[in-house]
Amino acid sequence: MSISRRATWLVPVVAAAAVGGLVLFSNQADAIPPLPPLSAQQLADNVASATPTAFSGQVEVTTNIGLPDLSGVTNLFGMQDPSLISLLAGTTTIKVAADPAVGGRAEIDSATSAYVAVTNAASRDGWIYSSGTNSATHLVAPASLPAGHEGKPADPAETPPTPQSVAQQALDALTPSTTLTVLDNVMVAGRAAYTLQLTPNDAGSLVTSVDIAVDASTWLPLKAQIWATSLPTTPSLSVAFTSISYATPDAALFAFTPPSGTTVKTVDLGAMVPSHEAGQPADQADPMDPADPAESSDASRPAATVVAGQGWASVVQVTNLPAEVSAALADPAQLGSLLAGGGAPAEPTRGHHDHGGASSAASLSQLLGAVAQPTPQGTMYSTYLFSLLVTPSGHVYAGAVPASAVAAAASAHE
Image 1 (spheres, rainbow, N blue to C red):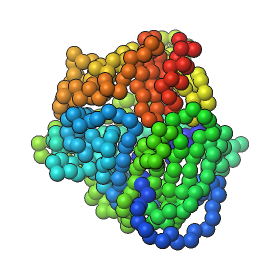
Image 2: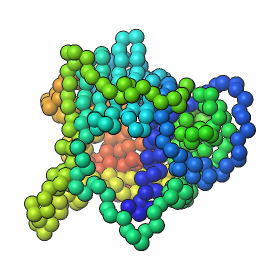
Image 3: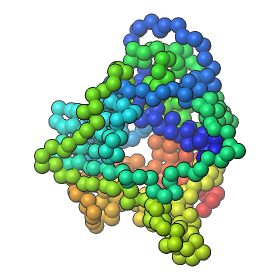
Image 4: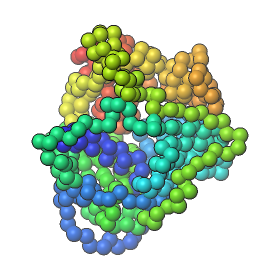
């Protein structure tokens, strides 16, 4: 893998990690100890070279992306508690723990139910459990990486990447479209932190900025906030530690045994890899045979192409989606059933335990129906942070831009 390719995946991975597990600025009035000044490059270097650290604490997630009132949604993906629905619109508190060598855990508790997600490195599996439905999904990883996924042999002529070079590649990938600024230092959950702000250079994006706070001692990102142009005074999405400890969590937190009577669905992640990628012998796949899936799969896979704008204001066209996915995106009723785990509406629980699937599908369809708007170009979904259009041809156009920009891109390319 080349250094430039490492930088390509580093940017979304770092962004996803910041948004998926990190913290909001604390309102504490603690004095901020003086910190050595750092440039954006130095801060990125420190994050890239940091040793993964164990931690535990409490995270607060606040979401306001312009969804309609969700008070009438009583069951979504089997989540029957207001604390879970508030992940889409509102504030939710999550207890988290992680040990890079052992596993990770996230738990949401309320007065009526608990939701737990656990991963374990030793057993190579994970669990998602809901006490409200007394059901669990057991995710089982393949015993080894399938053929073709182990990574290519190192190129002797290629210089091994260093944390500094990876950070530089990431910054090089960002800076044509983004201004990176180190803001004033802050206190986050009692920790002194640097603040890195990413501001789009491109006019027309719905995103004003992304702010990330980084622990000045461990270099763990401690806070992520996404600001929308339509909400100048509050973040549209904020994920925040309200407390954090770097003591190593008890390993028992990463082992999960479902309670007696739990309905368990097992998902073999290895079975999701196509056979020609999962170690199929070479003599069983003829690369010259046009009917061979290894030869034809690229042409049939979904493809994304930037068709308008640039950087943060880009509009992407997605083609080659499965017909059932395109049809579901165009019809909130079908999409609700599909996302609830039921496939087509006529068979709401095909291949799955229901766990309230029918009512979940109805609730999700209700939600999506309130967001979806019919337009001359097709079905439009829009929020404070992104817009998505499904055309009658089955193409999808999406971007962090207003609905009008997505519609214009579709009109020019359909």
